[in-house]
Image (cartoon, rainbow, N blue to C red):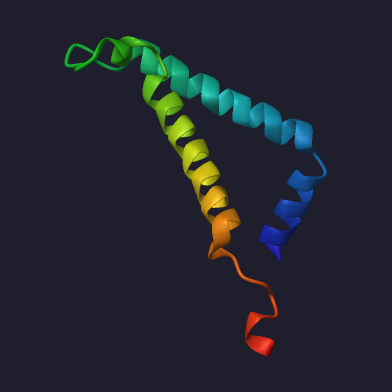
Length: 84
């Protein structure tokens, strides 16, 4: 029941959740920019703060787009496929 109350609390406060997410992203970028050793970077782009985070985000978005495209090409079937 405590988890349900916590979820309800967060649902009632979307601005708080959004600000917390922005705070986490800013913390990760600061940590990347100030504390990580980038002397072993293989390419020039790795020296940019947040490069791998942005790379991962773009990869996830592309994966979702490809999966939706494959579903639209015919991998998805009707809901009543087995009822016939």
